[in-house]
Length: 627
Image (cartoon, rainbow, N blue to C red):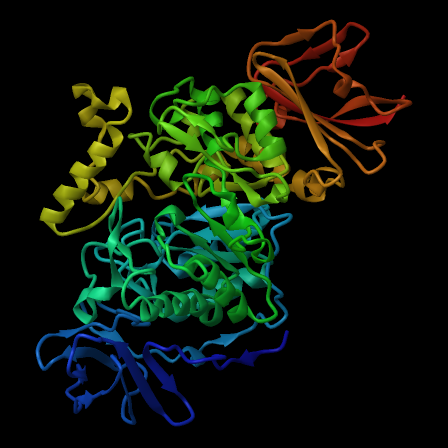
C-alpha cells in the first residue's frame, strides 16, 4: 500500500491552523461582545493582537509553531483556552497546543469507508476497554476485535473533558481529543490501524449541551447557548436564536473536522431530541450530516442517531424531507429483551412485556411504538418505520447507559439464565437489523459498567445526587437497603471496577465462541446475510416461543429460526404454515445455542413424525436439505 502524506482539504474556520508551507499559524475566534482579543503564548513570546471583523477576531503569527501553547486573552484581562483547541495537554483548564495534523502519515488510501448493510457494531469506552485506557493499548486489541467478527467500532465521546475519568458526555473542548487517552496522532494511528484490519471507526459526539466544568464558550460569547431551550444536562446549544449563525458554523465545522482530520467513518449523535432547532431553514442536524459527508470526499460514512422519542424522519432521505442520517438506536428492542430476560417491567420498561409478538414485530418493523399511546410518558411514542431499510435499526441488549442504569452496573448475562441469555443473543445477532455489542459482552465480562465522573468535590456531590434521583424511577431503588448499592461516580474504585479484564476471554470461552460463530454466520450465510431483503415473516407459537423465517429469492434455501424462552414446547398440532419446509425438502439443524461447544447439552431433531418439539431456553436455526 502506498504511503501518503496528507494536507487538510480545508482549514478550520476557528482555532489555530498551522500552515507548513508558510511556517505560520493562523488564529481565529468568535467573540462578538469583546473589544480586543490577543493570543498570548506560554513561552513568553510576544502576544499577537487579532483583528476584528464583525465579531470574528483573526490574525497570523509567523513565529507560532506546532507544540507551542497559547491562550486567548479577552479585553486585556483573563486568558482562556481556545474554544476550538486541537489539543489540551493539561486538560480543559490548561493552555491549548498548536497541532500540525500533516505530520501523521496515513496508509489507508485504499480504504473506501463503510456502508450500513453487513455491519456488526461494537461500542467502546476507551478508558475502560483496556487496563491503561489509551489509544495505543486499544489499538493492540484491534486484531482480536477483527477475529471476533466486529466490523465497526463506535467510540464513546473523546472530546476533552475535565477529570481523570468520565464517560465523555460532559465534553467542553469539542475539537480536542481528550489528553487522558493520548495525543491526537495516537488517535489517528488507532483509526489507521483499524482500517488496515478492515474495521471502521465512528465517534460519538455530543451536540446538545456542554459539560459543567471547563466550559469557557460563554466567556467568548453568550450566544453559544440557547435562551429558550433547555436539556436534562444544562443549557441547550443556540441553533435557532439570535446570532446563531456562527454557532451553527462552529458545530458544522466540528463534525467535518473529525471526519476529515481523523479519517473517521462516521458519527453517532447523542440525544438528538435535545438538539433544538426551530428555525425556518434546514435543521442543524441535516446541515451537519451534509458537511460530514462532504468532508469524507469519496469515502462512504455512516451517521447514527440516538433519539428517545423515536422520530424516524431523522433517517429518511433528504430528498424526501428527512434529515439524511443512516440509522437509529432501537431502545424498544432493548427494553423488550430486558423484560423477557429479567421479568422486571418497572420504570421505562413499564410498557413492554417481552413477549414473542414483540420480538417478531421488532424483527419485521424495528420500533414497537410507532405512534401508539405510551403510558410511561403519558403521550404517544414513535413514528412509522415503513419504507426504511431494516438495517437502519440498531439492535442491542447492552449499551453504556442501560448497563449503568441497572444501579449495580451488572451485565445482562448476570440478570437472567444462561439459556435465555444465549437464545436472545442469537436472535439479536441474527435478526435483520444491525446488531451492536457493548465492550466485553462478547465474553460475558464480569466487570461492571458504572456511571463515573471525576469532578471537583462540590460538583461531584451534585452529580451523585442527580444520579440517585434519576434511578429513583425504579421503585425498588428508592428503598433504604438499596442505598449501599449505589456507587459514588467520583471514587476511583467506581472507574476501576468498570475496566475490562480480557483474561476472562479464556474463562468464558464458550460464550465467546457463541458470539464469534453467530457473527460469522451472520456475515457468511447466503440467506441470513441478506438481512431480510428477500422478505421475512414470523409467528408466535406459544406464550414463550416464536419463529422467524428468512426467505430466499426462490424460497428453496429459506432459513428458520426458532426461539423458545420457556420450557420445552410440544407443538402438536402445528397449524403454522411458516413451519412447512420448501417443496421436496426437510428441515435440519444449522446452528443451535444448545450446542456442547457453548455449554449446552445438544439439540435433538425439532421436526419428526411426532410433530414439533422445540427445546426450552434455546434458539435453533434450521436450513432445508433434500429428503
